[in-house]
Amino acid sequence: MLDIDLHCHSNVSDGILTPAKLISRAAQRGVEMLALTDHDDVAGLDEARSAAFEKNITFINGVEISVSWRNRTIHILGLNIDPDYQPLFDGLAAIRAGRAQRAQNIAVELEKAGIGGSLEGAYAYVGERGLIGRTHFARYLVEKGYAKDTKSVFKKYLVKGKPGYTHHEWAALSEAITWIAGSGGRAVIAHPARYNLGKNVLNDLLDEFSALGGCALEVISASHTAQQVEIFAAHAKSRNLFASCGSDFHGPGESFYDLGRLPELPSGCVPVWHDWNTFQNN
Image 1 (tube, rainbow, N blue to C red):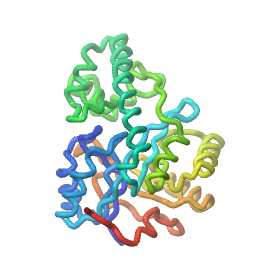
Image 2 (cartoon, rainbow, N blue to C red):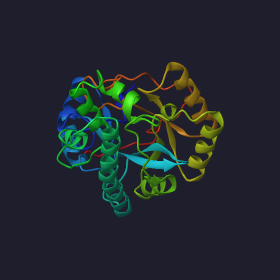
Image 3 (tube, rainbow, N blue to C red):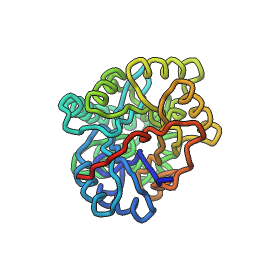
């Protein structure tokens, strides 16, 4: 079986490594097929693709799109996309513009909680593209001693009900799926267990996702327990959705999983890559 990882991040969004260094780490760990799925941006794909060609890694164009659904934030992966597809390109640009405003709002909320300088501190961790996310705030708060690691920052400050949380409207689910499908890619619900939806709401999401043309669930994820893997495998099989796998790697020391070496998909799952018979690295 190929060593496949279809969810990871570079410093184009909120990862630590450059796209090329990310590919080098993947090669060192034996990854044979990898998708770079930066948040709301495809700017790292060319660099990663070139590096993957040199390392003999099959490279898949990807992106992770921020979506608002029933006042919740859901992440939708686009795999095997055409990054030059204009509606996708324009849609991602609009989402990135909204990230800057959300960052200002987060900083205001943290200021109310007695944490100053967070906007400037977060931007110090942002890459050349200027794309800012909650992870950049988390790194700043760790630097200042508010928590021991970025995972603890999220739990204490950046999720709903905590001092640094702020609501933000992202793209609609229908928009994200339309952009991905129009570009020739497959839409995948990333780390579905992370949303804590409850049985009925989860079923509603899966129903709507499928009806809109969504293709797959991320069954193997760093966010999933072994029991949750089986639950989402069952959902994928019962709904004729493909199954995907990804480490959601952001950098050494910040991720539950490193790149690659992921558990196998449960029996009976149809991999999202099952009919990608030929791959182009250039």
